[in-house]
Amino acid sequence: MFYILFFSIVFFVVYIAFSLVYEDALRKDKKTIKEIAVAKKIFDLDEKKIDNKRFLKEIAFINSFIIAITVIVVDLIGLNSFLWLPIAFGLILVLIFSCYFIYGKILHRKWGNDKDDKKL
View (cartoon, one colour):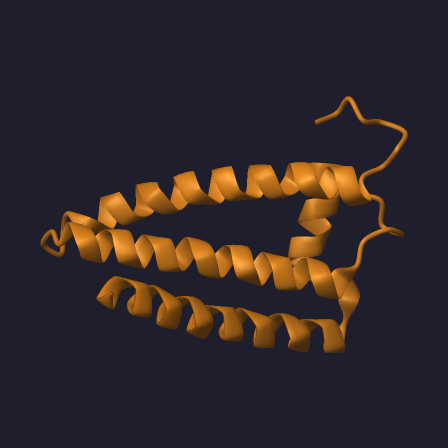
């Protein structure tokens, strides 16, 4: 029960922090947001179809999920301070690659360029 509560608290705190940062970036200038530019290039997205606000909320959700899962797993393992660092780093890498690969496939189906579907 403690870990569910701990996961929820970490998730919501990180999600709110990411949401505030992304909302501020959307208000300032939409062209300078790196996440959108990288996603357009990697996942071959059509710039006219992308909903920037929804995209950034989903990115904040994914990032919050990755961070909360990593914190919970490292806390569950309960190793000393020098051993948890490589485990956390490896777990973060695996979660980032897997979550963003799945999300990229979904984005390409939703907002991808129709001319070149064989790229992904």
